[in-house]
Image (cartoon, rainbow, N blue to C red; front, side):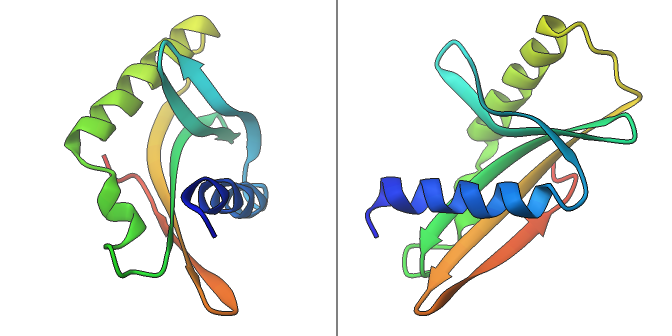
Length: 115
C-alpha cells in the first residue's frame, strides 16, 4: 500500500471505530493549510481526533508522528473550529487513533485525551 492509500484506509477504519461511541460532525476539516482528521461529539464533549496510519512499525509507530508541533497545529485548528461554529462545549478532548497495517489485517490503538 502506498502512503496515501494507507492514510485513506486508516481514516476509514478510524471513522468506523469512532461511530461506535460518537457522532461524527466533520472529517478532514480545514483551517488555512491545516486540518483535523475527525471532529466528533458525544454528550456535549467535542473530540478532535488525529488519525495516523502506517504499514508495519518498521519506521516507528503511527502515534509517534504526532509531535509537539503537530499538536500545536491541531489545537489552532480546534480553536478555529469552535469559533467558526460558535461552539462553547462543556469539554473538549484531543485524541489520537493509530492504525498499523500488518499482513492480513490491522491494529487500532485509541489514545484518549493525550494533549
